Image (cartoon, rainbow, N blue to C red):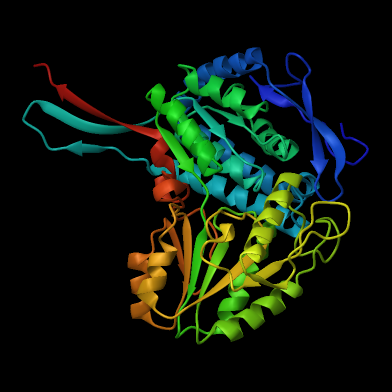
Length: 482
């Protein structure tokens, strides 16, 4: 069933059934490129959440007892369906999130690869036998932690939910995932791939609702054993505190304010092109998006000129329109927040070289923006913009700029450009970030870990480390009976 906009009707998925929810409460879903309401998302009641908890509890018993070869086969079948349906999933994602169709479709395809990686890697979640006294067998076992409660934002509607789902299911956990109320149909399309692949009922449950109500109820329940969250630092702190009250471990992938350091021996044109490409991907709505550009004073003029050229070449429009390279911001909140940050910077003396304002059309469009002469006290240099804006700041001394780059309480991603291997090692050793890219602006990959330090969170997603949070380590000491 679809709406007049070609947008699918959205339902929750609880205990193997698609449902509207107990009271029929809904919230509107808005296309950010047109500001039109294209659908409604059902909001869960406490009774709905309790059904999901009961389903996850039973689903865990079934799924952990399923032979791993069978589990892996189902997950690979789901990955095949995600890849096959990537164009369809991508179109839905673009309708509700706004990013260009090519980006949405590629996200779905990469999601399938992530699922395959985690499914196979779970087969290598080895324990070990420890040498012990005669007559004693001492072993270490790795077991699924139990039902997971996961919460994801709207910026990666396919990849975000799937990083949690694929990790949990691969090791034998069940999961309740609260998808974003702004991008619910994409999450539902992803879940349907798992359902159609033969996943047993209750193993995967999808709910929507008032975020504070849903998180408080799921975290407090004795059923859930792990809390996994991607989102803002303030919300992450709140959920971590709630989990701590009931002694539950949590996995927190939070925001950042990624510095880019362009050293004196870097190629300024190449650095500007690489950095601009990353900056305007998904309209800057990426946790790891480069967002503070520190450029050596000898290169700043050339770097800035090339960056402005790249920004002005970005084709902004509806993500479904051919040729669009950058879509709208996801909602009006982001638009207002960016307007405030730019206005504050300008009021403190910054100059806008290009962009700097919302586009005069329907939708939440903001022009790719480059600023210079941004003072240190500008909010833009301290608050994660999560938007297509680039403040460029010159520096003269590498040690001094490393101090500035590390001065914020965040530490998710960082970037460096240099022609020297010694300088690259210095950046690698001294930048305080969980993800560092040298001479490019690399994104997340399924074979390597991603995650933050300081207030950007803890735990890792991707690579073998992705499964750690979803497993518990059990020591078994077996005294043999004669």
